[in-house]
Image (cartoon, rainbow, N blue to C red; front, side, top):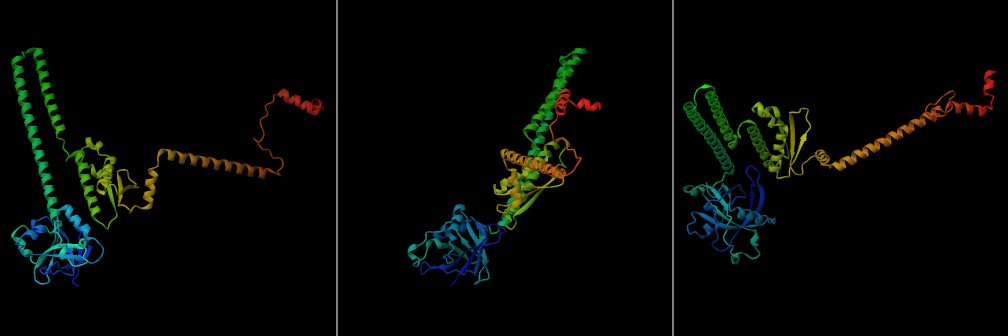
Length: 424
């Protein structure tokens, strides 16, 4: 059996995964046999014209290309999903390897637009959903006459990122030059206007106290017009690369880049974002530092976590000993520690439940205090029993009788002998 294991790289820099185990299938007597290695890795994508399956099928001059159908024999049924992925994005998957029959570099292409499957020429019992149409070129130097296929996704990504950075820098420079030119033109216009008004005022206004007063008023109005023009210019074209806005923008870009790296690393499930307010506002002018607070930077971190993590990540602030330095831990879905989840759930309790829990705690504490008081009174009474000449205070009610009532009661009890015994 001439079987080949096909591996697929989902994204640049990720370990390849198993796709299918295939073997060639002959559709007719003139079908072409391919020389494939034992293991093949599909690690690139392209939209070049030479990668189209219909062009090779309909063209008479194939320029050395061979075509074949490969049948999946592993039973995992992964080929239909893979082919649908290619059709939706209209791009072909490419593998490059050394040809065993020649000392050249061969190319295998899985096009997104394969020709119709010849059902009548297939062997009996073959499932069409498990067939894979491929193109094979034994020597990749044939493509050097035209445009080379893009087989290095990492390099292409770096080039695109570099181009985007250059475009952003050029746009910022152009905007800065335009602002400077506009400011210079406004200054020149203001100077010309002030000079013309000063000359007209000198001609039209006579001397004396009234003339000097009117001239001073016109000069003040000219200066105010210049200040208003500068303020309008600054409002229309705000500078987002310096001051408080620049600090927030640079911090947002740094956090976004770190979270993108964390997202692409499948072996890491938690990361930490540290915020040092002193270092972030170091380059911000003093009059703008009230705009860059710790709450602003925390909001930026939570915003980027929601955007990059697509509302599936959890961000939790860790306890620190400093006010101007905090650390926010970010966890991927399904890898959040139990204590962090418990703290988050406590923070999410509504106000009614919090009030109910406080009321229950207060009630329990009052009940415990009553029990302690009763037990202490019982113990005190037990200690008093059996002792002589002991007076217990605050156990009886207060005697609210008047002196006359007390004397009258005493006389009634002693039968009138109280005064007589007192003199005896």
